[in-house]
Length: 258
Length: 256
Image 1 (spheres, each protein chain N blue to C red):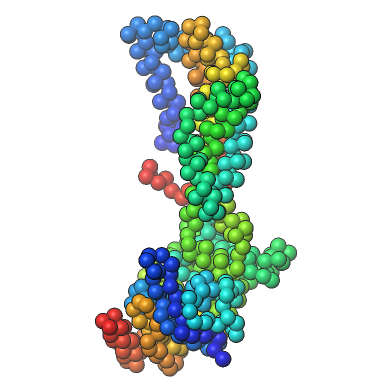
Image 2: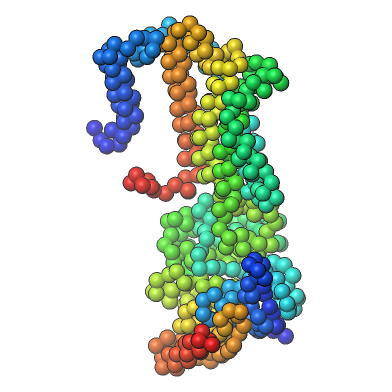
């Protein structure tokens, strides 16, 4: 049984005459521990898929099952990061990372008592992404890439089983972006959570994912699923890699024209 | 003189310059003292009446702070309610806007009918004039929380109360403290309005009494005392703001 099972889902956003049909008959399966990415033309409902899985939006029709249970509301086994790192400016880096632990049970109720334990954990994860020296800095003292690393740490601090990423590296320069791919991949290889990465960067999708799913234009559904069998770490200049990216790109061009 | 010291001396230089122009202007155009007294005359009057002035100032200050304290409590509560609940925003906000556009001087007579003259109408007027910016600012702080941040919090299963405590309150603090600076000066306006109409104590009353005696220098002395109290309170709240929300202010803004 897949860890995430989206089956024949429609989703209508309220508003307008009869709402906007964002997803139509969309189906997607993700195995436990799998790293998948969803690519597609902009406005195709990729982000909506994430909101379905996290329980922030409920399907108008069809079913969404995560970890064996039908999604009926927000799931605390989920960690999220977005294109905008949205740090809390009044908190230091480490306190930003600790935020989920102040909310998610069972951590929230013992947070005060076990504060030093949790701080140690936050320091560990910050040092994995190379930010340990910046734990007591405020967000405005960090670069965009550092803020995005912090955002990743915050998404992972409560050890979620499912990580949802919505174009998390979209606003970064090429060097930082590629650096963070490696950081994310290392974290994933170490902790083996399940990842759904929404992106419009095909190189990013092919570099990171076990399977790349292509989304049609609105109303969105998954039209192609492309497994990526290349061994990790992948070389983005290898001919196999380049040809895979090219074939996906051709697919998306077709989808947009359709 | 370093540029830093020059900058801290600037307000005083401005004031001195203004006073000099004032003094010279009065002399040059031989303006009578009961129309516009010179700064020196005002200073003399201030010194002659220093006892009563201090006494009445304390009364005014106490009333202002009492009204302001109520305004802070109710303003924050209202702001939180407006910013957190759609039905309060829809229902109450238009009413508040309408209420705020009523000139407060028009409400003082009503207070006098209800409570008689003196402290209560003054405190109430100070409160009425100053609570609105506080409520609006706190509500704005809550309304401008990034939607992604709300998604993160909701996805983690945070309750509305928890989102308010962890995000909403700290997020609206810069707005709150900015509004305090405005509100405290408005509170003085409210107190003085009420005192000029319905009181037999306070700086507002003192100025009305002086007007009745054509003692224009004393009226101006009263104005100066009010301005000084306003500046001192403003500076106090600006300092508290600086302490509490240093994270919200990173640069010099346009003045850099």
